[in-house]
Length: 592
Image (cartoon, rainbow, N blue to C red; front, side, top):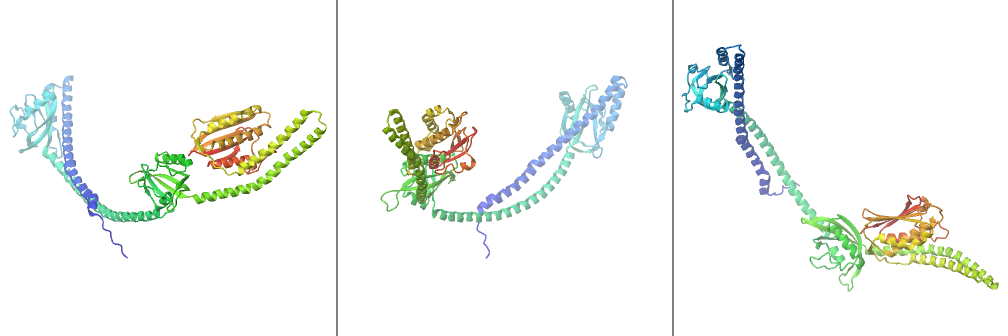
């Protein structure tokens, strides 16, 4: 089935394509006849004027040479002037060798004229051309004034006395003899040459014009086809926009556009997520956002709208009241925001995906994992409690024996102290197990991690000093504040410092712990390094597993708790070799 050519807007086509073509042709013709040809005519006349000036200078040099011979005594003045007259009389140039030179003096009297011999020796003061100009008087005046110059007048055509035509001559005075020598060009000659050049230019221009018109017609035809394709493309774009709008309107992702802090568009899924919103809703109204997430949502939106970043994503909670619900329900969404241009102005495109069910499943899986871990915990508890309890039993037996033969109460107190230490170990193991298994929600606030580090170091400073361990810090100031639970982060740092100090107690020299912070690519980096024996590669893979430990008295829960806390902060913790020779724990927490 053949496709019909769509109707295109002819008015627009004529204005954009045909009119410029016609104007181009008109401008070409105007430039040729009103700029190019007059320029050539002026250039040709200037070139001829320069030619006769140079020719006159050359003839003048002949006079100068003979006058020089006169000065040297080679010739008398009469002989020199006679030779000059003969040489000038015989000088001819031009296409037919009929262009000539003449000499008159300052009287003015004609000294030599090759064609008007009737004027030779005559006083030409009163000689006038047909227009009444005193030609030779003009020659004298211009020489007196400038030494040389151009004069326009009427004169006979070369040797034809019957033909009087316009002429331009260049004259130059020869002061030693009081002579004026000159030559000229006929205007008609110049015009004839220019006419010949003009004819050639017109012929070439006509050829160029024909070729240009052919090319322009071809371009018009091509543009016509382009217009048809453009019209079809625009129609396809409109159809595509309709299809895209249908896709957006029926998407299961909430989509809305914010411009000048106002929601200017939202699709049905977004309405379903957020519930009814008034027209021209202000996005800075955070009443529906969970109180703990208000600050991060505000910073999230401001980072995009201010142009700091072009794209950003985050998860947050909000309260939504659906139709038929009395109380709002808490929902989790994953949101992506991008800076775009909408209707000619800057805007923010926000996509929201409801991940409430995913979060619920994640929580269930977390509980499941913890229940699995509790099985390992139970086995660990049995092992960890058995040894201290055995010690207690032995100590209690010893107390009983001592009580039977009590002679020294100080020894009894020491035994009792050992028993209390053993029970303290049991209590510590049980507390760590409970910390690991108890569900808890971090209380996130914007905090300065450097301050948390300083407080953790203050708590451990006495123990470090007694153990002879040197603490070195390199904290970048200022650091961006990060969302964190201060107590949990302090717990992580204390755990890492304690682990490092226990390793260093075995060393005699170079006991050193280095803590540093810096900001890299929208993350705050915390590094805790020590000068101990380090972590072997095989152990590094398992070091964060629950109940994995290399210490004889360790429970293996501490680093697992640290990893869980950092994960709750959307960060990661890793271990590698440090520059100090031991291990280096690196924590990366995003700046949101």
